[in-house]
Length: 411
Image 1 (cartoon, helix red, strand yellow):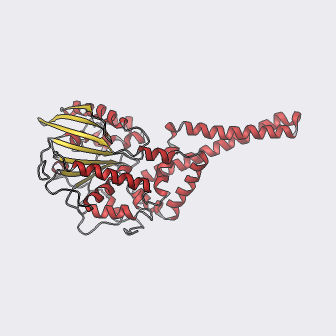
Image 2 (cartoon, one colour; image 1 turned 45 degrees about the vertical axis):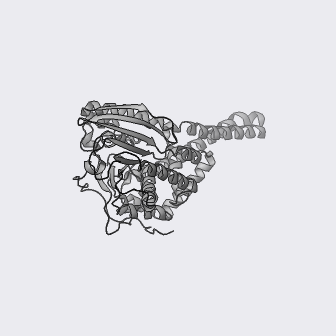
Image 3 (cartoon, rainbow, N blue to C red; image 1 turned 90 degrees about the horizontal axis):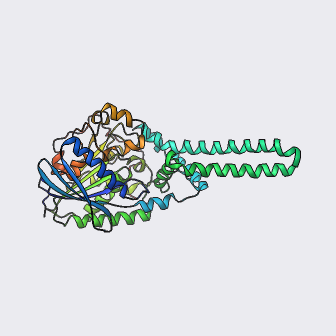
């Protein structure tokens, strides 16, 4: 069995935890295949994918030759897209009710103002669906009013009150039809998608719904099993909302004594995290307790990578410290920037700068001017996460002061 003290990796298990995403996990395989090939060509190494036999979790295998070493990695996606889809299967009126409830939770609790002290980008991203949905509602209302006025002008002289009734009926159809049209085009607007995303955590004020707790337990079992296999590293990658799931999964794993001594190196890479959107809420006792616990453990290495260019993430915000739960013996995470403006060429940065959702996935993509962050070397290269960043200092511009109003870790 691979030993946690080894700094070389020949075999690795990777568990990728997506964010709030209803899409089939094959999109992550195709993203890895395409971007991995691009990064290999840029950086001068070899990487190839092949399908994995069907199992409980969707995945693929990676064979790479990096620094003259052959490395085999098995990647699995810890799927919770079915939970996401179920949470999104609401009517238009229900979505507007979510809007009111979510806005109330963040504003009345004071969480919104404290989040703005960290980074304005993700707060603006959180306010975007509120503004967009209200704009859609206003446009539908204006269209309905115009329909009534035109209908009355045309029909009333001939049909009297019947003309008014017809105008009103047509106006209602226009109002409902336009709202349905906006929802059908949400692949471009992202208003409903983001509203459901923020509402999912706000609806329970930061506590995990029962179905999510059950899935966290399943994910913990899968990782625990991998820790008893003949591999050198078990790497957990949590992107966006998947980062705070990763925190709870790994905290449970260690608390339960399921990390074997002398087993594979256990590594955690959080990317583009939005932890404060949940940990700043009043009932997020479980997440805050997990953040505090995990930050002091020596059973794992935890590296947190964000970038100020990603307007959807809390860039360079230490998720433990800003949540107000940092213990005196805090060790993790190591927080540093992927520095998009430096690791992407001016031409590439110009092309991506205003594509906010695409930039939120840049951590999983190729960089044409890579520095020390390379997703494919981390997931398929010959070094453990601990070895790769053993001498890496944290970013000086990180935010590591307590900001959250709610710091309780006991329910």
